[in-house]
Length: 353
Image (cartoon, rainbow, N blue to C red):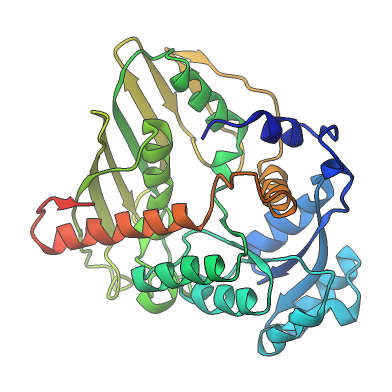
């Protein structure tokens, strides 16, 4: 989406619009203290302008004590999954960031919303279409913001590529290719389990390819085709090893991609009649490499996690702001993944959306 003038000023730290910039930072509770939360989310609150860490929610008391001490969170602000509902009485918590395996997102998102809090849900929003619909409907019913952790919408290289596409530097875009995968080993505790890991590779890592196609196409697909590629690996009894998929967009753009738990890839390629963008790595946590017609793209540096959290905080403070990565987008992606797998089950039959 194009940033409005109000959003642009807010994103750059301007405080000239009424008293919007003078509001105290939005209070965040982080639910789930796994690797992503402790390595990428908790440390980046210090870079936020509109968000502050005020609470931790965990099923492991030892982690609560460890990270509570590290980030100055008092004991009475550390909650357990079992007593999550108590946050309803904590006025310092405005939003709960759910960072747990996908199969648990629905439960924690719904409980946080019912406790009267806004929610940021890590991607994928869920691995079940019915659950995704319920999450979006619950947020709307309670008039709460529901954001999804699509950090690439705030990552400088991806934003620069999007700007170039919108400005016509590639001419008319007709084709987008994206492959995302990583090698899953015996270390995995939940990725390969359908109930807790979502759809499998397509929802854990393939969603980056789906996101890239939709973002750079500037539209939602109207038709999808997909495959399920089974592996003899004993890990893949509940989810398939790999998926290939085609997304057809209404503006004449076709997207093709693949995802896997058996090979490594992280790329996006955008083809227009007047230029081409190549990105590899495209969506990692760091070391992005983007080129326009072979020339390196070097955008201004920015912290994608801080910008992601601050954007939701600003949207919470200002109801007029458009949430770029909201629950409706998360639901759209679940619909796409669900349709890809239904297409595969129908022998590659195109599924209309």
